[in-house]
Length: 374
Ligand code: PHB
Image (cartoon, rainbow, N blue to C red; front, side, top):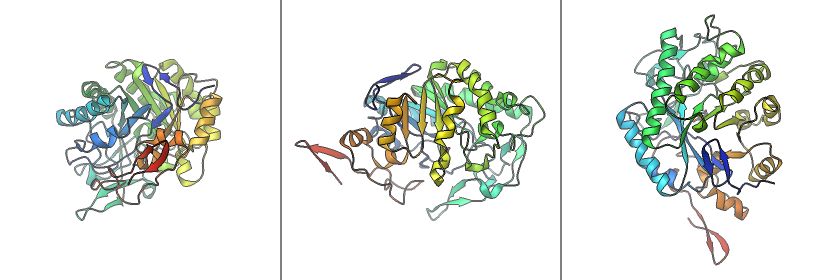
């Protein structure tokens, strides 16, 4: 029976334990999308995770849902990440780059005054999109999304090329692999949703056609790294960013066999609705059971106790923790000790200084007794 502290392999990724750090936006990159140098310290403090999944990294200038998120399409951005990844590796950690395109979940103010891109320009729900900006006074606030427009075929190809280039840059920066962000109402999820994707070309219609963008992105990335180093994050039921798939069982039931055939390192299933107190974890796994037999990571509001049961039952190979890892750099040690756990501080989640970023305490074992150090 597997435990959280047993090794495992997800494709070519070799994990020292089953405790994964979930991707989390921290919004401290500079205006050019270069990751903040302090990220080296932030991630290095968390290398006891079996795998770190980086914060979402924009694949190009038209992806930006959160101000000051980092990118991976320029030389400077790649160099910035290389310093962070080197530090993680020095400390014995493993890290994949989460590649992100926000699509319609954005606003002109974050896109050099350009109109956000989307499958079909569905704009009847802009108040439900999560777009955040940093104000001159230092406040990080939610702003109104601005109407998106339908992408041309050339722009769809452009996005595929952006994912390939960002993955190639991830290799140059030394990342152990990449995770494609196909969840939470962002561009790939927008294409998968029959409500948001109304296209009549090869990228819309049946679930298989709606997944064509995703499949082309996987193939493009596979040109620059083995499939066994490519993960994919999905959130079939997520209401986040108004993804509005009325029948996720149909959409994802149909693409699960395609994912099985794709031979990826792992599938990462996020139960994003658990954030708002309406978990759908129990409905999510049956969609994939029997159709996808590859490695599986699950995420969202899972307690360490529940995580241990999930891993020991074989339901999933590893568990990704978000908020717990944010507030507890040494989360595996704390799980082993049975806690206690720091709670996230109310400020400094998005943007700002080192406060709420580098100042979470570690649990130290002194003479066999656990003590929290401020
Ligand atoms: C967030 O920063 O709140 C965020 C980013 C990406 C997601 C979900 C939430 O997929």
